[in-house]
Length: 155
Image (cartoon, rainbow, N blue to C red; front, side, top):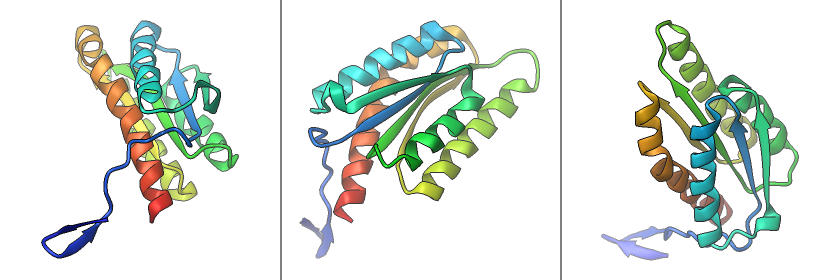
């Protein structure tokens, strides 16, 4: 703990060496999702998460992510999860429906189970925007999962 203006503060901990991480990835927009996954798994390894302590489950689309994440969270096998997907705007209202329901579902699962879920699902207007953001978002999601798992253990 450190002191910040006299307040005790838990330090950010990005050591993943003792963590078990589950990844739920949508197969829709597969090329974008593969880029997100590559960045995520690279970052997990960089922070010490062992490959044998990582499990990938794929689902057809973004709306299926929360259900698979819920099952993984309830299994007791994971310290944190990462959700990976790409929802690219089309010409219909479907984009808003999928984006909102997916994000709401992910949040509900983590609140109901107490297992943190890093939301690495891109919601963009174009494929080009998604490709441009994939590496950063995948990397950030990995770090978020590790940080939150460690924070919850410290609390």
